Length: 427
Image 1 (cartoon, rainbow, N blue to C red):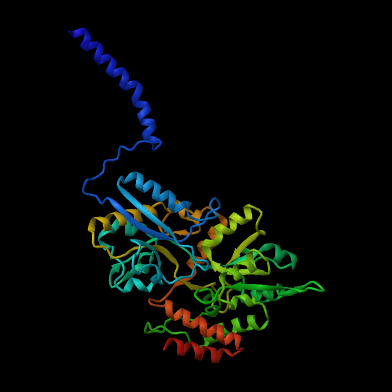
Image 2 (cartoon, rainbow, N blue to C red):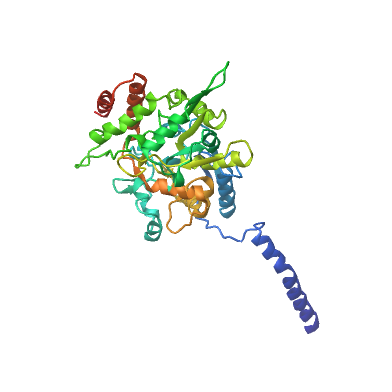
C-alpha cells in the first residue's frame, strides 16, 4: 500500500511544480484574480460621468477613465461602473444640468462648483485619514471644504495660460517670451505686431489674441496685472480701486488696438478654438492648461503648427498672477445605501491615487513629491503657483462680471464706467 501512495504523492508534487508557475503567470498578467471579495461589500451598478482627459496617445480623451474602470471592476467582482462621457463643446457647463433626476453617483467638480453647498453631495471626511491629507500639497483639499466638511477628492491642478503659435511669431519676427514670462508692455507690443491683414484682393485678418470670455476665468490674468485684489482688508469680495482700474485700462487698450480677435465676443467656443488651432488666424489663445495634451497630439500628428505656452503678462504687480478654480476632482452625490457610498469612494480614490499619470492628461499633481518631467508642464506648474483661488460662491458673480466687461468693451466705455457696471453686478 505504501508504494501506490508514495507514487501518488510524487505525482502530486510534480503536478504542483509544473502547474504553479503557469498559474502565477496568469495571476501576474491579470488573467485570473486571487483577490478575495468581502461578502459585505456593495455589488451592483455605480453611475459615473466625466469630461475628456486628453493625452498624446488619446485624442478622444476617455482612455484614462476607461482603463480605471476596467481595472477597478476586475479588482471588485460584482461592481459595474456605468460611465457616461460628458461631451460639451464649450467645456464650460452648469453642473446642475447633470445632477437632476437620474443623477450620476459620481460627478466631476471644481472648486467653483457652488452646488456642493446645496446639500447635493456627500461629505467625505470620514474616509480621509491624516496620512492622505498630509500627502497633498498645501491648500488643495481646502478648496473642496465647506462648513468643515470635505465634498470633493482632487485629481489635479490647472489654470489659464496663453498658448502660442510659434510659427506666426516667427513669421512676424516676434520672439516667444523666454521661460514663458513677459512684461505687459512687451505683450501689448507683440500682440499689436501680430495683428495685421494679408492679401490684396481677398484680405485675411490676423489677430494677436483670442479667448473665450463668457463663462470662463480667462480675463482675470489681465485684470489683476497691476496687483488688483479680489478681497478687501475685512475679507469682503470686491473689484475696485486704482489697481483694478489700471488693469482694466490695459485690457481696454489691447481691445482698442484691434488685437483681440472678434470671435472672442461671440460666445461660441468652437469658433474661438478654430481661429487659433485650425484657421491659424490668432497668434495666441487664452485657455485652460489641461488642453495642452490635445495640442501636443495635434502637433505630433502634423495637424498643428509648432506651439509653446506663456504665462499672463506682468504689469505693476510684477508677477503673472491670475485667478482660477484651479482644482479638478470628483464628488459623490447623496446616497441612501451606505455600502454603495463606500464603494463609490473606493472608486474615486482609485482614480486619483496614481498621481504619476496626471501629468500625461494635462494636470499638475496634487500630491507632494511627484516629479514633473515635461518642460511645458513645468511652465504650467509655475503658472499654477501664480494662480489665486477663487472666492467661495464666485461662479455666478464671475459670469456677471464677464458680461459687464464684454458689454463695456463692445460699447467702448471707459474703465470707470465698466467698473461701475461690475459693482452693480456684484451688489
